[in-house]
Image (tube, rainbow, N blue to C red):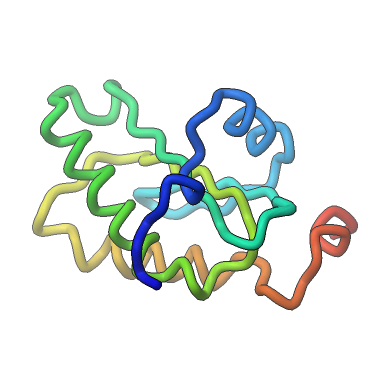
Length: 123
């Protein structure tokens, strides 16, 4: 139930492009979350952590691990959406509680499971 399967990851460039072209986004201090409804029965996650944000690969990988784990624990609450999360500002271990709050706050602003993809397009 709480595993992160291969199907729940955005990997292809076309998938990322379609989310960016949909142009729905929510931002906070550290994170920007872009989303697009999908026809699957599960949410999918794509992560972007640029070298400009964190120069060392160790730091970029830490940020990816944290965001992947937060998504894994809350994926059952998310509607069938493709999410692309982009890190705006470098964060480290002491910032974990802030990142968790921001992530949960962004998720609360997402459309719920009851809203269909047609309703999102109309808004």
